[in-house]
Length: 189
Image 1 (cartoon, rainbow, N blue to C red):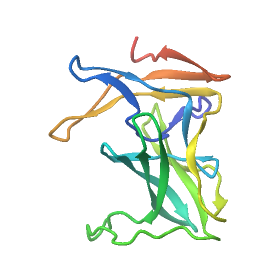
Image 2 (tube, helix red, strand yellow):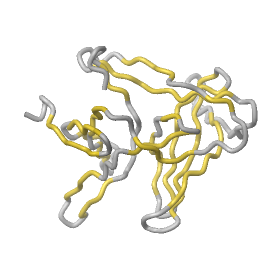
Image 3 (cartoon, helix red, strand yellow):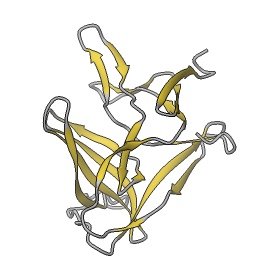
Image 4 (tube, helix red, strand yellow):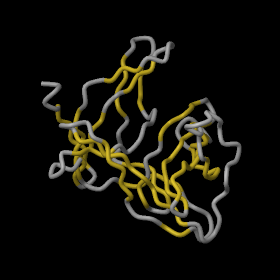
């Protein structure tokens, strides 16, 4: 969160929660880590989840062109797994509604720039930010890395069987020296 600019940056969507389906009670599994690409934070959006993998779309610039990186978290066991990057996918054409058919493999010399959407909490205005870039030289490593010390807005998003979206009240998760502290937001009070 950037208090100077009244913005919070969307780090992405994930399903890393614990819960009791019978009781309908769920709680966070926020551990102060987030996915990175070659050491740079990225904003993965969960597209699909199965028993074997979670599929993500990650907004990036690839050689200056806006696109999405497709990646998955592959479950090796109930507690362990790894990330696999498939390549860049251009998504759905806004004019024709046609889905891109190709996934372009990343290759040496490609420049990858993760993109983040920041939202002004007073106006709702969105801005797109680039937070670093790297040149591909060998395999691109996607892994969990420690988050920087700071405040992180945390919220549940629930999608029902009809596709309707519901949001919980946000809380602030503060990371300080590897410890996590939770605070209610003004909206929750």
